[in-house]
Length: 82
Image (cartoon, rainbow, N blue to C red):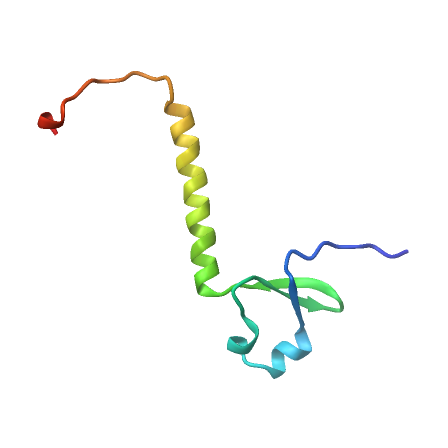
């Protein structure tokens, strides 16, 4: 019985090839799946892509805060008061 598993990357590298190569040669602008016995064992991300993901997570959290506060108490202020 074959069990399928999703791979969330467009590129893959085997553990054997990873040991032989430089990580700088493998990492690209998108995630790379590291396969162990043809199953994903890890994902390699470039620093830029990792920072992009962190920014996206922060945006999601900020969006939740905005939605929670929508329709709440408001206070009128003038620009001169700021």
